[in-house]
Length: 76
Image 1 (spheres, rainbow, N blue to C red):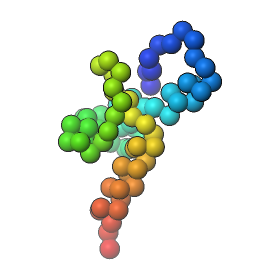
Image 2: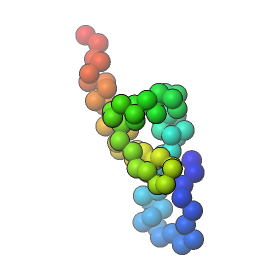
Image 3: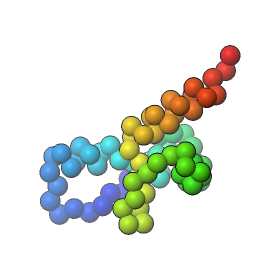
């Protein structure tokens, strides 16, 4: 995972950046391809944080999305 370069980072910033995943990290976390993650982003199903041209996802956002997907596609 690549994060924005910072000359001086505080411990609080390190905690926050550890909770961010780039597209590759998000796809690995969700078990999807990077194209599937980008498709979910384009369709509005996933929200992201943009820093310049970089895209990051909060780990908590990915967990919520997975839980909501699980509820939608629950097998009886």
